[in-house]
Length: 540
View 1 (tube, one colour):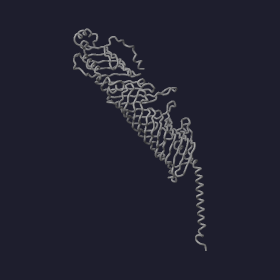
View 2 (cartoon, one colour; view 1 turned 90 degrees about the vertical axis):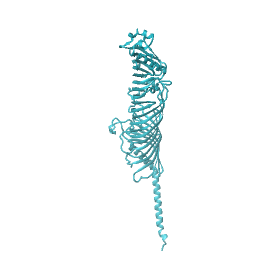
View 3 (tube, one colour; view 1 turned 45 degrees about the horizontal axis):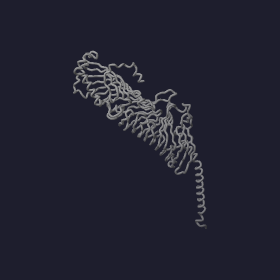
View 4 (cartoon, helix red, strand yellow; view 1 turned 30 degrees about the vertical axis):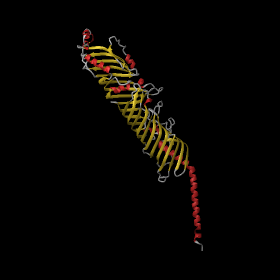
């Protein structure tokens, strides 16, 4: 009779052989898998990208390493929007590296831990004229069949990219695309049909400055990428306004935006602590709250409202920054068109922006209605600015003592009390229309009123030269002879009839000329009128 250990020996050998065969099978399967994984990975990547972006996919090469986790490297990936070759690729990626674990593999919930993109460039094509159009409605689109490989939903925990480029292509081919250099981009929790969280640090093109933005992006609109929704908060810093000739200062802004890539609603607060115009070079603290709409396809910005504050002045602004239509042979001209309204401004604050040296000529409350246009160009802002406005300064006083003394003297004489020194510190009301063109301000119906006298003037003021050239008529409530005392009064009685205005007043031709720092006020009895239309021609 055999012993027990001899009886079970064949069984032990059988299990050893079986386990060895199983291990050999696994090894052979592993080798086969390692050889076939790149092909499978290529199919997975192409199927996922094609399904998500509805675009044709080109991949230069794919390498797969390891199993737990699986590491994948892909090079030279190109996505063409709906297969189109008439526009730049929707996306190009120089190198893609990533890893994925096998968690959820058997229950068909695939998850990729992280993806890193190098050389990422995204170009958002212009929105189609008919957003509802399908591929068959547009013959220039390449028809694509659905991928045969049906995959479970794939979730991406994190995608990062450094040194990326985002371009939003314009509808018109003769216009420049909007470009944003993205220093760092992070996308988190990417799930099919849901928005992803993002954090982006990028450079704004005009004016150059740094933007830090964080919010949600998506879900991706494969048919119309420009209609992909986005919502975020942003911080815009270190924007140098010196990029615009004639301006200086460093802009910073915080706020939020939302909408779709083609059209974003923006609201925020801006600060320029050292804002100035080159014509004065006097820095001021400028703050503003703004609401705007940005068209991402062409960069046009529509300023719904801006409340700007500096010194003791508040300006309410609306307008647009747009490309004006141009003939096909010419590039479109970018132009700023702005309307300004205020009942809460100070003359000394406004003049600070456009006068040189210390102080300003006039102080007083201002009402202003203005519209200005500023075309793009390389010249100084004051040479390109075109402005038309109506203004009113209430109870204005002249800051230079000599100028105010002249106003006091005018009021005394106009009231027929030339020797009454109690009439002093007289406030003036000034109103009129003016236009600015080529750094020159042209005044029409400029009215100047003090107790006892009023003047109606026309003329110009050089914003750069600071030369005054105003001419018109001065009306006094008193007779000419009542403007002086003593023997002069007796002699002037003879001239009363020649300068009579109504029954008791007087009217005199006057001028205000010379430099702003020391203007000359006087009679102008021999002035010849300039030919009609001279000022009008200067305004064109």
